[in-house]
Image 1 (cartoon, one colour):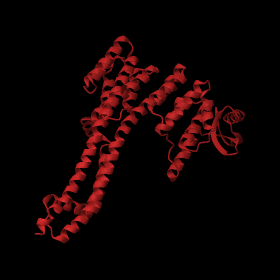
Image 2 (image 1 turned 60 degrees about the horizontal axis):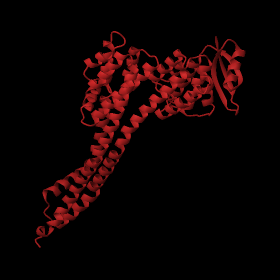
Image 3 (image 1 turned 90 degrees about the vertical axis):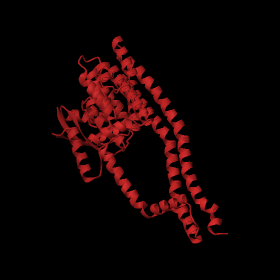
Length: 414
């Protein structure tokens, strides 16, 4: 087939362009009209839609005008749910994408949908079209779609994708919501302490100095700290910011990342939440892949890439290398001593009964429940603890400032 570059108009008169694949020019015109565009000019070209689109994006990126389109998780969830509903209603995937693209959304979501639609019209499979945007569509997403296409049950695959990502978003939201209140307490408490050290304490210091009062050691220490913050606070803040930036770069790759991820797992409360969330994500993702017809070894490879902690993901990779029969994964996972015994035992039962996907569903439910309990416990303990800590700091500053007032009479020999 040949490729034809076209310039056309939408029904609203807006200018559009693209590349379609057809046997001849008449076939190209029919495809353009099927998309819903009115062709103005159609010329044969040697470039495919991918190459043409890629050159445009590279050109725009080099000039600094546009970055490659990427969906946020919320946008991905909405797109997946709408696409799943349309396909389940009986629409072809091409018509469903055309319906979604008819909204004329100029955001990244709209551009991605238009590109996917054009690729489908040219005969590309949905899974291959999704690979154009690896930043948006993960290996898990693409492989579930590919499995659905191979089995001839794409609507079910899209539904499973929606369920999976909705559960992932729900788990993430629980952890984030649990940290919102403590973060507010820390920020407000820190701002109050900083304001007292910069504004209130210097005023008291000037008053005490003018009176010639003999100050107790806690007050002297407080005034010295206030003087240091007032004089060198900006320098300390700049150095601290630089240290944080360097630290973040260090923990993103190599040895630094392994050291940091190992340390995080050992934090008393946070480490338990991270590991529980990782176990839940592991079982949910692996179970979803197996239910959709992906074999064990490729599924483990996909799951390994979706786990954020390199210690846990590395153990999954080692287990994948140890798997010899292509089915049993409980023993290879047990050798690493990273995954808990309960999870291993439940996997083993699933393998013995021939229902590994069902066992993974039970594991997911168990660790989702455990995650909820831990998040609630953490929130219950952390909130009053932070309030008490802030109260102690603010109260300590207030007491240090009031101590000279209480001894002022003796200091002035009255």
